Length: 321
Image 1 (cartoon, one colour):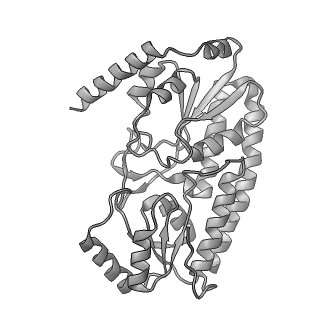
Image 2 (cartoon, rainbow, N blue to C red):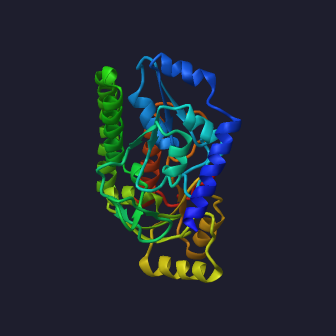
Image 3 (cartoon, rainbow, N blue to C red):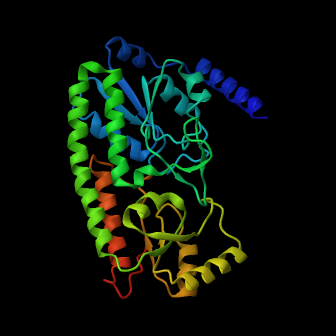
């Protein structure tokens, strides 16, 4: 069945590329030795944008719409295929989160170079929630949301810079210089994580799903349960009742929702247990403009919320959309 699906996808790609061939500007760009990079989704786009800042003839484009979120089970559109065909490089998070980054991409552009930003990172096992079947180096069920740890984000930035340096060696010094500047800023964020961890008086939380597991590990938090095992698939009434019992039994201090999903379930759990809920942004989608410091701003805001929720600084810390 998988082979039939793959063949069907490749047929559709071939049809799209026949009907909508590579734009003429892509060929002229390649003739000028320009490098057009495609970033799979928002955090990878922000990281790559920082690495290529000021590099002549190099540009980066975000493939998924900025409000899409993680590319779980994302299906490539004809517009995506045109972007892939017109690009020299595709930068991905890796660890299986971009399930499309295999035969469909190669069929759309056999010459495209793929940079895996998570190369060398040892992933956490996915305890619950959506997981990704790893490639040959990461078999089994794994958690691919490594960018939510600023320390691992810095590793991803260095990976992107190193790979671009190999692809475009004449600009290697600039890529590495930009990466060093960005990771220096990330070091301040990493220090903020350590500082926040030292201030927390409570450690048990409930999360919407497993996207913050890496940040939770950095902060020394225990995620006792997830609201949705798979985003978009609300828990049954029985599951909600079990969550209420778990929150009460484990003396959970905070419930964390996400801005990309309606707050109703977090509100229900908060009302039933008396535990306040807060909204943490996993930096995987944006509603407004995205600058080079977008990741840092969002993560600093997340740390402030976590500190308020778990360091005993608020008596009523519910925050709203």
